[in-house]
Image (tube, rainbow, N blue to C red; front, side, top):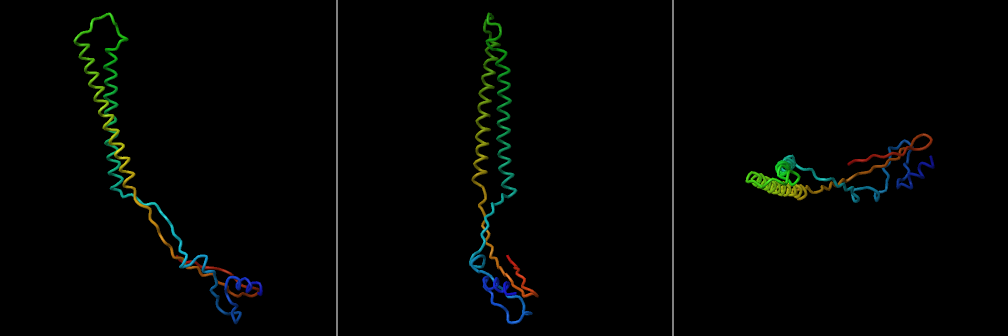
Length: 163
């Protein structure tokens, strides 16, 4: 019993007058208390509208880039028909020149759609970064109530916490 009250005295409690007295509240207020709150930082959450807007803009960028790929492949296919790997002993005809011009215009369109798609994707990325929600700080004011209760042959040491 003396050892239990010695522990209680270290924790800041005084021994009760009677052995059947109710539990005494003890504790060190400098560890956790109203003057030492717990601060928790949580990341902010994006709204569903923000996610849908950024995803929609990114989707438009992907469609434009996909059109660039389509025109690029079409240009490559058309230019392969007039490439130097074909017979070179034939004279250059107006049909060959038309195919060459068509392949060149498709390549220009592919470059334009690549540029537009890339710009829109970069814009979606910038929008995602700029509209990031701020972190939220939550302050918890805990109340710690360690207790010592005399018991036959010693004492019980316990505690209760409230947030």
